[in-house]
Length: 151
Length: 139
Image 1 (spheres, rainbow over the protein chains, first blue to last red):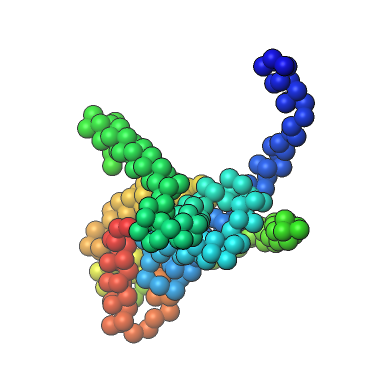
Image 2: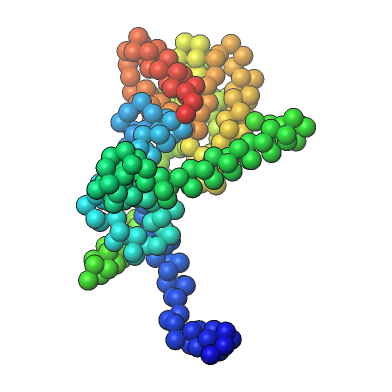
């Protein structure tokens, strides 16, 4: 069986991904997570001394804490199963990636197990996040220097 | 079987959101003003009324300080800082001796609304100071 034949055969047998359905569930799941986050943000601005701008810090911390608990009790994987990227992209997905890796490698010890493997998946997110932030800041600095935009 | 529960919850969530979205009407008094000085407040009222980017405005004028919390339209929130600056300039022109603070932040709107009901002068002053320090805070 040559490569071409195999490719056509594989195409015929493998099930088609339900793209429209997946997109819809991801939209709903991501939207629901953001709605909860907005609710928490509103809670912090209403009952504590946070403005809309400064309330983002405690909101993110709370969302991470909730996702951590859900991951520990094995509920977050169900949400991720249903929502796909909708559950992976918000900060809760990042929290899930860190905590699940930490739980998985706990048997190997705290330093080389948990410490060494915690950021196996999430480390790349941090690296590329910091790097892209650096690039964007560089571009903006140059634009401000030439007077195209202001800070 | 795990999926069905989440699917049910998701469906319920959706229907609740759609139901709530249907009853978003706004017909309350859009400009609230509290004034305990002898400055003429009509001019400020005109500034807020003539700006169609705003939905609501709460204004407190006390001693030599003017505090304004405004709620902007949904897609105007991307230009919040510009709107704040515009309004501040206009108000400063109308009231040269008064120190003006305009903010489109929801927190300022909430606190200013509470302030309009305060009777105690000392406490009012304290609250204004608190809002000012809050609005200067960075992340």
